[in-house]
Length: 353
Image (tube, rainbow, N blue to C red):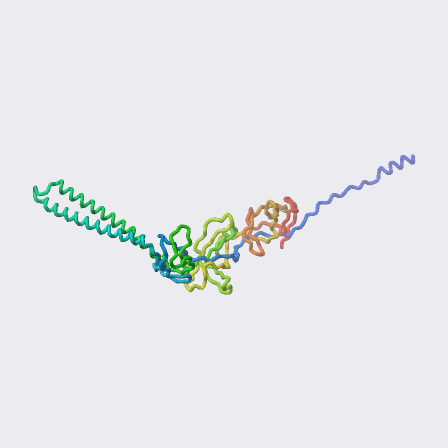
Protein backbone atom coordinates (compact mmCIF):
# COMPACT_ATOMS: atom_id res chain seq x y z
CA UNK A 1 0.00 0.00 0.00
CA UNK A 2 2.80 2.43 0.87
CA UNK A 3 4.46 1.84 -2.54
CA UNK A 4 1.21 2.47 -4.38
CA UNK A 5 0.59 5.72 -2.49
CA UNK A 6 4.07 7.01 -3.24
CA UNK A 7 3.68 6.29 -6.98
CA UNK A 8 0.33 8.06 -7.15
CA UNK A 9 1.70 11.07 -5.26
CA UNK A 10 4.59 11.52 -7.63
CA UNK A 11 2.35 11.31 -10.66
CA UNK A 12 0.21 14.21 -9.41
CA UNK A 13 3.02 16.80 -9.16
CA UNK A 14 2.32 20.02 -11.27
CA UNK A 15 4.06 20.18 -14.66
CA UNK A 16 6.20 23.24 -15.52
CA UNK A 17 5.72 24.53 -19.10
CA UNK A 18 8.56 26.44 -21.03
CA UNK A 19 7.83 30.11 -21.59
CA UNK A 20 8.30 31.20 -25.21
CA UNK A 21 9.86 34.63 -25.70
CA UNK A 22 9.95 36.71 -28.94
CA UNK A 23 13.34 37.39 -30.59
CA UNK A 24 14.71 40.87 -29.82
CA UNK A 25 14.30 43.43 -32.65
CA UNK A 26 17.46 45.51 -33.39
CA UNK A 27 17.37 49.28 -33.47
CA UNK A 28 19.42 50.89 -36.28
CA UNK A 29 20.33 54.49 -36.96
CA UNK A 30 18.62 55.76 -40.09
CA UNK A 31 18.05 58.83 -42.24
CA UNK A 32 15.24 60.09 -44.45
CA UNK A 33 16.30 60.39 -48.09
CA UNK A 34 15.85 63.88 -49.54
CA UNK A 35 16.73 65.31 -52.94
CA UNK A 36 18.56 68.60 -53.25
CA UNK A 37 20.49 70.64 -55.83
CA UNK A 38 23.99 69.24 -56.29
CA UNK A 39 26.94 71.58 -56.72
CA UNK A 40 30.63 70.79 -56.54
CA UNK A 41 33.77 72.88 -56.83
CA UNK A 42 36.83 71.07 -58.06
CA UNK A 43 40.29 71.97 -59.32
CA UNK A 44 41.64 70.20 -62.40
CA UNK A 45 44.92 70.56 -64.31
CA UNK A 46 44.80 72.28 -67.69
CA UNK A 47 47.19 73.26 -70.46
CA UNK A 48 47.45 76.56 -72.31
CA UNK A 49 47.91 76.24 -76.07
CA UNK A 50 48.29 78.88 -78.81
CA UNK A 51 45.07 79.69 -80.62
CA UNK A 52 46.83 78.95 -83.92
CA UNK A 53 50.19 77.29 -84.55
CA UNK A 54 51.82 76.57 -87.89
CA UNK A 55 55.09 75.00 -88.96
CA UNK A 56 56.54 76.78 -91.99
CA UNK A 57 58.18 74.50 -94.58
CA UNK A 58 59.70 75.34 -97.97
CA UNK A 59 57.50 74.35 -100.94
CA UNK A 60 60.45 74.31 -103.35
CA UNK A 61 64.02 73.09 -103.01
CA UNK A 62 66.77 75.63 -102.74
CA UNK A 63 69.02 77.50 -100.34
CA UNK A 64 68.02 80.09 -97.77
CA UNK A 65 69.24 83.40 -99.08
CA UNK A 66 68.03 85.43 -96.11
CA UNK A 67 66.16 84.59 -92.92
CA UNK A 68 64.62 87.80 -91.64
CA UNK A 69 63.27 86.62 -88.27
CA UNK A 70 64.41 84.86 -85.12
CA UNK A 71 62.68 83.43 -82.04
CA UNK A 72 60.59 86.06 -80.32
CA UNK A 73 60.12 88.10 -83.51
CA UNK A 74 56.62 89.50 -83.92
CA UNK A 75 55.38 89.20 -87.52
CA UNK A 76 52.36 90.51 -89.41
CA UNK A 77 50.21 88.57 -91.85
CA UNK A 78 51.86 88.53 -95.30
CA UNK A 79 55.26 89.67 -94.00
CA UNK A 80 58.25 88.07 -95.74
CA UNK A 81 60.14 85.99 -93.21
CA UNK A 82 62.63 84.23 -95.51
CA UNK A 83 63.79 84.17 -99.15
CA UNK A 84 64.97 81.09 -101.03
CA UNK A 85 67.58 81.09 -103.78
CA UNK A 86 66.65 78.66 -106.60
CA UNK A 87 68.20 79.82 -109.94
CA UNK A 88 66.66 76.99 -111.97
CA UNK A 89 63.13 78.08 -111.04
CA UNK A 90 63.84 81.70 -111.93
CA UNK A 91 65.32 80.52 -115.25
CA UNK A 92 62.19 78.50 -116.04
CA UNK A 93 60.00 81.48 -115.22
CA UNK A 94 61.95 83.69 -117.66
CA UNK A 95 61.76 80.95 -120.30
CA UNK A 96 58.02 80.60 -119.89
CA UNK A 97 57.61 84.35 -120.10
CA UNK A 98 59.54 84.39 -123.40
CA UNK A 99 57.43 81.58 -124.84
CA UNK A 100 54.25 83.41 -123.89
CA UNK A 101 55.45 86.58 -125.65
CA UNK A 102 56.38 84.59 -128.81
CA UNK A 103 52.99 82.87 -128.82
CA UNK A 104 51.30 86.23 -128.44
CA UNK A 105 53.18 87.60 -131.44
CA UNK A 106 52.18 84.63 -133.59
CA UNK A 107 48.60 85.03 -132.54
CA UNK A 108 48.59 88.75 -133.42
CA UNK A 109 50.09 87.97 -136.85
CA UNK A 110 47.58 85.25 -137.70
CA UNK A 111 44.73 87.42 -136.43
CA UNK A 112 45.86 90.28 -138.64
CA UNK A 113 46.04 87.91 -141.64
CA UNK A 114 42.58 86.57 -140.91
CA UNK A 115 41.12 90.07 -140.56
CA UNK A 116 42.59 91.09 -143.94
CA UNK A 117 41.32 87.95 -145.68
CA UNK A 118 37.92 88.40 -144.10
CA UNK A 119 37.72 91.98 -145.39
CA UNK A 120 38.79 90.91 -148.89
CA UNK A 121 36.30 88.02 -148.94
CA UNK A 122 33.45 90.50 -148.83
CA UNK A 123 34.24 91.25 -152.47
CA UNK A 124 32.81 88.36 -154.49
CA UNK A 125 35.35 86.17 -156.24
CA UNK A 126 38.48 87.61 -154.58
CA UNK A 127 38.97 85.07 -151.72
CA UNK A 128 37.84 81.47 -151.74
CA UNK A 129 35.90 80.08 -148.80
CA UNK A 130 38.63 77.46 -148.20
CA UNK A 131 41.34 80.10 -147.86
CA UNK A 132 39.20 82.08 -145.42
CA UNK A 133 38.57 78.99 -143.29
CA UNK A 134 42.29 78.12 -143.30
CA UNK A 135 43.22 81.59 -142.04
CA UNK A 136 40.58 81.36 -139.32
CA UNK A 137 41.81 77.95 -138.17
CA UNK A 138 45.40 79.20 -138.01
CA UNK A 139 44.34 82.17 -135.89
CA UNK A 140 42.40 79.91 -133.47
CA UNK A 141 45.37 77.52 -133.19
CA UNK A 142 47.73 80.40 -132.41
CA UNK A 143 45.28 81.71 -129.83
CA UNK A 144 45.18 78.31 -128.12
CA UNK A 145 48.98 78.16 -128.07
CA UNK A 146 49.11 81.63 -126.56
CA UNK A 147 46.60 80.73 -123.82
CA UNK A 148 48.59 77.59 -122.99
CA UNK A 149 51.81 79.58 -122.79
CA UNK A 150 50.18 82.15 -120.50
CA UNK A 151 48.89 79.36 -118.23
CA UNK A 152 52.33 77.74 -118.09
CA UNK A 153 53.94 81.08 -117.27
CA UNK A 154 51.38 81.75 -114.55
CA UNK A 155 52.01 78.34 -113.01
CA UNK A 156 55.77 78.82 -112.99
CA UNK A 157 55.35 82.34 -111.64
CA UNK A 158 53.33 80.96 -108.73
CA UNK A 159 56.11 78.49 -108.10
CA UNK A 160 58.51 81.40 -108.16
CA UNK A 161 56.39 83.12 -105.55
CA UNK A 162 57.22 80.21 -103.21
CA UNK A 163 60.75 81.59 -103.11
CA UNK A 164 59.33 84.25 -100.79
CA UNK A 165 58.11 82.67 -97.54
CA UNK A 166 55.44 84.82 -95.93
CA UNK A 167 53.66 84.68 -92.58
CA UNK A 168 50.15 83.19 -92.97
CA UNK A 169 48.85 85.26 -90.04
CA UNK A 170 50.10 87.65 -87.39
CA UNK A 171 51.95 86.02 -84.52
CA UNK A 172 55.29 85.41 -82.86
CA UNK A 173 58.17 83.19 -83.98
CA UNK A 174 58.62 80.52 -81.31
CA UNK A 175 61.03 78.18 -83.08
CA UNK A 176 63.82 78.50 -85.66
CA UNK A 177 65.65 75.51 -87.10
CA UNK A 178 67.83 76.77 -90.00
CA UNK A 179 70.43 79.41 -90.83
CA UNK A 180 71.23 81.44 -93.94
CA UNK A 181 72.59 79.24 -96.71
CA UNK A 182 70.88 76.07 -95.45
CA UNK A 183 69.39 73.68 -98.02
CA UNK A 184 65.60 73.39 -97.68
CA UNK A 185 62.77 71.58 -99.41
CA UNK A 186 63.76 67.99 -98.58
CA UNK A 187 61.14 65.59 -97.22
CA UNK A 188 60.76 65.02 -93.47
CA UNK A 189 62.94 67.97 -92.57
CA UNK A 190 62.30 70.24 -89.60
CA UNK A 191 60.25 73.38 -90.24
CA UNK A 192 62.12 76.56 -91.08
CA UNK A 193 60.26 78.42 -88.33
CA UNK A 194 57.16 77.95 -86.17
CA UNK A 195 54.62 80.77 -85.83
CA UNK A 196 52.08 80.97 -83.01
CA UNK A 197 49.15 83.32 -82.54
CA UNK A 198 49.15 84.01 -78.80
CA UNK A 199 46.75 86.96 -78.70
CA UNK A 200 44.20 84.29 -77.74
CA UNK A 201 44.97 81.00 -76.04
CA UNK A 202 43.17 77.70 -75.81
CA UNK A 203 42.85 76.27 -72.29
CA UNK A 204 42.27 72.52 -72.53
CA UNK A 205 41.06 70.57 -69.50
CA UNK A 206 40.64 66.78 -69.33
CA UNK A 207 37.41 66.39 -67.33
CA UNK A 208 36.86 62.99 -65.60
CA UNK A 209 33.96 60.93 -66.89
CA UNK A 210 32.03 61.29 -63.61
CA UNK A 211 31.86 65.07 -64.12
CA UNK A 212 30.92 65.09 -67.80
CA UNK A 213 27.23 64.54 -67.03
CA UNK A 214 27.16 67.77 -65.04
CA UNK A 215 27.31 71.31 -66.34
CA UNK A 216 29.17 74.42 -65.31
CA UNK A 217 27.32 76.78 -63.01
CA UNK A 218 28.72 79.58 -65.16
CA UNK A 219 30.67 79.21 -68.40
CA UNK A 220 33.27 81.71 -67.24
CA UNK A 221 35.84 80.05 -65.00
CA UNK A 222 39.00 81.10 -63.17
CA UNK A 223 42.45 79.57 -63.31
CA UNK A 224 46.02 80.22 -62.19
CA UNK A 225 49.42 79.28 -63.58
CA UNK A 226 52.62 78.10 -61.92
CA UNK A 227 54.55 81.25 -62.84
CA UNK A 228 52.11 83.47 -60.91
CA UNK A 229 49.96 81.32 -58.58
CA UNK A 230 48.45 84.30 -56.73
CA UNK A 231 47.01 85.82 -59.91
CA UNK A 232 43.72 84.45 -61.26
CA UNK A 233 42.70 84.71 -64.91
CA UNK A 234 39.36 84.19 -66.61
CA UNK A 235 38.43 81.90 -69.49
CA UNK A 236 35.22 81.21 -71.44
CA UNK A 237 33.97 77.71 -72.25
CA UNK A 238 33.85 77.41 -76.04
CA UNK A 239 33.55 73.74 -76.95
CA UNK A 240 33.58 70.15 -75.68
CA UNK A 241 35.09 67.12 -77.39
CA UNK A 242 31.78 65.23 -77.26
CA UNK A 243 33.39 61.83 -76.57
CA UNK A 244 35.25 60.04 -73.79
CA UNK A 245 38.90 59.14 -74.35
CA UNK A 246 39.04 55.35 -73.71
CA UNK A 247 42.62 55.59 -72.40
CA UNK A 248 42.10 58.30 -69.80
CA UNK A 249 38.29 58.11 -69.33
CA UNK A 250 38.10 61.88 -69.72
CA UNK A 251 36.45 64.40 -72.06
CA UNK A 252 38.37 67.45 -73.26
CA UNK A 253 36.72 70.80 -72.52
CA UNK A 254 38.25 73.79 -74.30
CA UNK A 255 38.15 77.34 -72.97
CA UNK A 256 39.22 80.56 -74.69
CA UNK A 257 41.53 83.03 -72.97
CA UNK A 258 42.07 86.64 -74.04
CA UNK A 259 45.83 87.26 -73.98
CA UNK A 260 46.27 90.63 -75.68
CA UNK A 261 48.62 91.76 -72.92
CA UNK A 262 50.79 88.62 -73.44
CA UNK A 263 50.70 87.94 -69.70
CA UNK A 264 50.28 84.20 -70.29
CA UNK A 265 52.60 81.84 -72.14
CA UNK A 266 51.49 79.07 -74.44
CA UNK A 267 52.52 75.66 -73.14
CA UNK A 268 52.05 76.60 -69.47
CA UNK A 269 50.14 74.33 -67.11
CA UNK A 270 47.17 75.75 -65.22
CA UNK A 271 45.09 74.95 -62.15
CA UNK A 272 41.48 75.33 -63.28
CA UNK A 273 38.62 75.86 -60.83
CA UNK A 274 35.32 74.41 -62.02
CA UNK A 275 31.92 74.86 -60.35
CA UNK A 276 29.77 72.02 -61.69
CA UNK A 277 26.10 71.43 -60.99
CA UNK A 278 23.25 69.14 -62.05
CA UNK A 279 20.34 70.45 -64.08
CA UNK A 280 17.99 68.55 -61.70
CA UNK A 281 18.04 67.78 -57.99
CA UNK A 282 19.46 64.40 -56.94
CA UNK A 283 20.17 62.36 -53.80
CA UNK A 284 23.30 63.00 -51.73
CA UNK A 285 24.01 60.85 -48.67
CA UNK A 286 26.83 60.37 -46.13
CA UNK A 287 29.48 57.89 -47.26
CA UNK A 288 28.51 55.46 -44.46
CA UNK A 289 25.10 54.90 -46.11
CA UNK A 290 26.82 53.13 -49.02
CA UNK A 291 28.05 49.56 -48.54
CA UNK A 292 30.67 48.25 -50.96
CA UNK A 293 31.47 44.65 -51.89
CA UNK A 294 33.57 43.13 -54.63
CA UNK A 295 30.46 42.78 -56.76
CA UNK A 296 28.46 45.95 -56.16
CA UNK A 297 27.57 49.02 -54.15
CA UNK A 298 24.27 49.17 -52.31
CA UNK A 299 22.26 50.97 -49.65
CA UNK A 300 19.96 49.34 -47.12
CA UNK A 301 16.39 50.57 -47.32
CA UNK A 302 13.89 49.98 -44.50
CA UNK A 303 10.44 49.17 -45.85
CA UNK A 304 7.64 48.26 -43.41
CA UNK A 305 10.22 47.41 -40.76
CA UNK A 306 12.19 45.03 -43.00
CA UNK A 307 15.57 45.67 -44.61
CA UNK A 308 16.05 45.66 -48.38
CA UNK A 309 19.29 45.96 -50.37
CA UNK A 310 19.12 48.48 -53.21
CA UNK A 311 21.94 48.65 -55.80
CA UNK A 312 23.29 52.14 -56.44
CA UNK A 313 25.97 53.87 -58.47
CA UNK A 314 28.00 56.83 -57.26
CA UNK A 315 27.98 60.27 -58.82
CA UNK A 316 29.79 63.36 -57.61
CA UNK A 317 31.88 63.24 -54.44
CA UNK A 318 30.73 66.30 -52.50
CA UNK A 319 33.20 65.97 -49.64
CA UNK A 320 30.90 65.23 -46.69
CA UNK A 321 28.35 63.52 -48.93
CA UNK A 322 28.25 61.38 -52.08
CA UNK A 323 25.71 61.61 -54.87
CA UNK A 324 23.95 58.29 -55.56
CA UNK A 325 21.66 56.92 -58.28
CA UNK A 326 19.38 53.90 -58.01
CA UNK A 327 15.78 52.77 -57.52
CA UNK A 328 15.15 55.19 -54.69
CA UNK A 329 12.43 57.71 -53.96
CA UNK A 330 12.06 60.84 -51.94
CA UNK A 331 11.43 60.14 -48.20
CA UNK A 332 12.79 56.57 -48.32
CA UNK A 333 14.33 55.39 -45.04
CA UNK A 334 17.97 54.31 -45.31
CA UNK A 335 20.27 52.72 -42.74
CA UNK A 336 22.96 55.24 -41.78
CA UNK A 337 25.75 52.66 -41.41
CA UNK A 338 25.22 49.97 -44.01
CA UNK A 339 27.16 46.69 -43.99
CA UNK A 340 26.95 43.17 -45.37
CA UNK A 341 26.05 41.66 -41.99
CA UNK A 342 22.65 43.35 -42.04
CA UNK A 343 20.94 40.91 -44.40
CA UNK A 344 17.77 41.55 -46.43
CA UNK A 345 14.39 40.90 -44.76
CA UNK A 346 15.80 41.54 -41.31
CA UNK A 347 13.30 43.12 -38.93
CA UNK A 348 14.64 46.39 -37.54
CA UNK A 349 13.43 49.56 -35.87
CA UNK A 350 14.82 52.80 -37.37
CA UNK A 351 16.18 55.42 -35.04
CA UNK A 352 16.39 58.73 -36.91
CA UNK A 353 19.34 61.11 -36.61
